[in-house]
Image 1 (cartoon, helix red, strand yellow):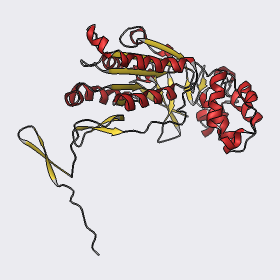
Image 2: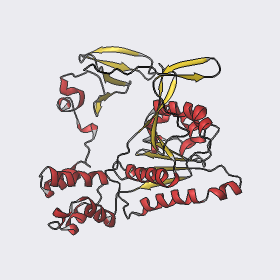
Image 3: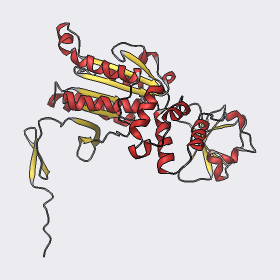
Image 4: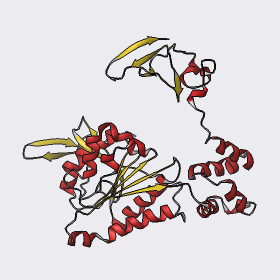
Length: 348
């Protein structure tokens, strides 16, 4: 039986008065469905593409932790005061900066906020991970989106905002609203507040609240363990011991503890020791030329001869600049000077 082929094009999309673009079967939507999205741009089609994204909900638990409860309360209070903002003549906009140790629960809080905005407010969340996302989002929001949905509730997530400071002007423009910031809640996360300038962190209306997310306290750790460990395994667990031994651990570390013990059959004691040992990161000054072959690029047998060298996570840093191993050829380094547009080849 012959296979039925579907026509690549079945209709026209009309742009303006005189331009028609061939298209496949399309469905017109008056608004985006409530959910989380990522904005990109198609140079071929010369248009923006809005793609729905799945939000990681592995740790989507309402922990009894003051910081987490406080953030959610601030979010709900903000949306409850919409009419008051209008009455007082203020733009309905807010910004929160969440900071703290890696794996401390910032992503879990973000997931809860997205869930609230999508389900309770029929809003849309736009997730920005890097400078490319930031640029596309900026152009999208200042152009077609607000023309189509001028009053939609918007949640904008800046994941690891410190990585976007290379274009601080663009970042600040986005935080300030691009000329239409009504109905916008900005939430940013960072592990490194020291990388953010005062223009970003100390300016009201950019980030009205700065909230430190600490490692979960004893009550939160017990709650987390009892909700993540399956019931058939809980009866053999001394939760008081687990709570005591996990003091100072982040949610990410506790998640790893559960996976290691129950899924990978590792012992509780050994896993605890391993996780606590991860906090002790060796100083780069403790390495010397005899031990450099155990880390980073030098596992490839490449030993650059430079003065005052020190190795940090695979990048050779010197007083003169930085060295990066090329991806295509593993037999030399590219040395960048203090002005990054100047570089020279350095043989190994």
